[in-house]
Length: 285
Image (cartoon, rainbow, N blue to C red):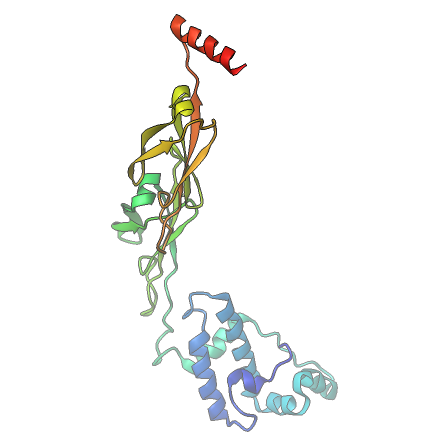
């Protein structure tokens, strides 16, 4: 073990009796056992430290050596006896220690949480904006399959994870079920580009509207809006519509919508229109 006080690991004093050691170990092992914590890496590390501390201190000889020599107790015993006593304890041994002390709970196997299950879900941008539901078919053993309706929250994006509690694999020996984790993919949209929770759309106007100014109405995911275009608006000019973007996932507020102006040049001009443009060119020059 790294340099640490084994008594502190178990939360007892150096004068603790074997009974107190065992009680402390039982309490901490229950709290940090990986089966109870869903395989959490931090809990597993702590569980190993607790087990190693108890293995050393619960043995009368190794406890005496540790009290005398601290972290060097194994080397001290090796030097005195001419052989090493290092056991190389692994996680399976830790589980054996846990089982020998607890024998499960009430003599029964330790409850184990079920595994999480994963499922991929595709939604449209409109569904990500408003929220939606999906009816999933989940394969089960040995029953075959079952159907489950799940809710997709507003604001999801490609890569979002939605956790459905208790809908994963069943637990063992009375343990809790795992969760169902949905991996979301939002399909591309014909009109909108999305960056974070902001949306970008192209608004096409005529050359005369760009020069003289106008009001143009177009559809957004939040409903129709009227955008006022000032005179002499340049091609590529972007207008920000606050709060017309995507809802934030699991928090209040929304992103913005950016409308980029695309000025469409006229084609198939009439003779009179050409005359007007000629006059305009002479005036501008």
